[in-house]
Amino acid sequence: MLKEVEGIIIVERSYSETSKLLTILTREYGLINVMAKGAKKLSSSLRTSTLKLTYAKFNIQYKKDKISTLISATIVNPLKETKKDITKISYVSYILELSEQVSKEHYNDKLYDLMIAAILKIEDGYDPLSIMNILELKYLDFLGVMPVIDGCAICGSKTNILTLSASSGGFVCKNCYHNDRIVSEKALKLIRAYYYVDISSLEKIDISDKVKNEINAFLDDYYDRYTGLYLKSKEFIKTLKKL
Image (cartoon, rainbow, N blue to C red; front, top):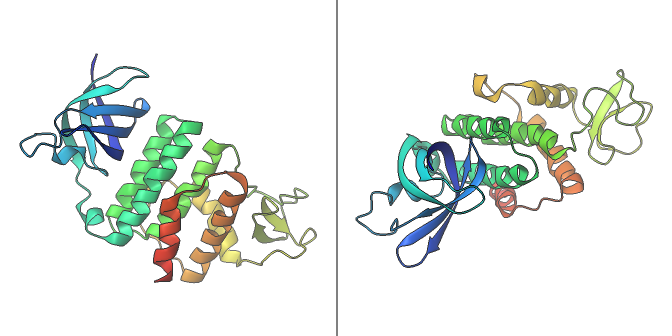
């Protein structure tokens, strides 16, 4: 069955001397495996459109739950700015790896749209840490472990919220507070904004490094505690931030 699907290549592997086996996260079918026959040949029309990070419309001979075959591809966005910037590549690679893992747990086209919106914002020069954190928070809904950010995670109080705690599961009020690290009031407001914002319609991100790091630290801790995901690309970002 010949199908056109929109997607992005998240894994590119050699298959035989001349071909490639691709894992593509598509809007229509989620994760699919696609054989690109002869794509490693210098003369192949598929050579440049079968690289990791290729965002394209793929014409494929689709086989459900089997390996499909790539016929041709038309680039949607070449992601030129991302591919020449090590920081952008690092964040986008993590987004792809995270999206792959989350889609295995629960996939629908909303997940795909969130991923593409995040990648395009990074391509356009938006702060990659903020974009990554927005996506991470939204993905927790798909994983079924969303933190409580509409009241105290312990007692349910909607007032006197003091801090954000991964160990407590979200917001903590003054009455339930023990020894959790205190985050700024700005971080408390932004974590809710992150959840509700439409990534594709973002026009400006102006957040201090202190607040960004507070939110990022919370999400790192939360993912470690509740998702069971360990992604090498995230470790590379942590190393990159220290440089």
